[in-house]
Image (tube, rainbow, N blue to C red; front, side):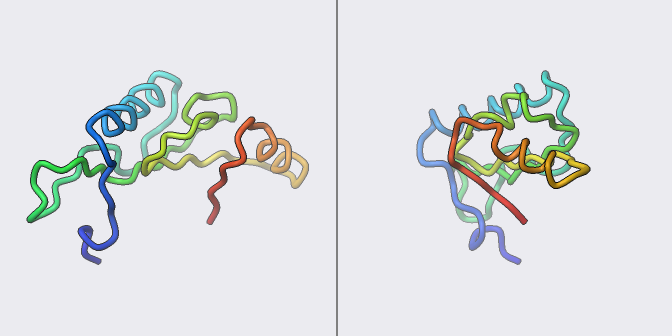
Length: 101
C-alpha cells in the first residue's frame, strides 16, 4: 500500500497542530497509543501537514480523545462487555459522528 494514495493531509497548519495536540491530551488522560500519532513523511510531498493515523486503546468514554472530534486521523478503541454497555457508550456523546470497523 502506498501511503501517498491512502493518506490525506490536514488542510491547514492550525488543524495539523490541533490534531497533534490531541495526541498529548490522549497521553495525559491515560490512553495507550497503539500505532501512528506522528507527523508522516511522504516521499515527494515534503513539508506537508501529513499525520500517520493514530489508534488509541485503554480509552474510556469520558476522555477528551473519545468525546471530541479531532477532524483528523485519530481513532479510539473502547471495550464493552454487553450489548447494553455498547449502546450506552455509543450514545454517550453529544456528537453525531461515528466510526466503526
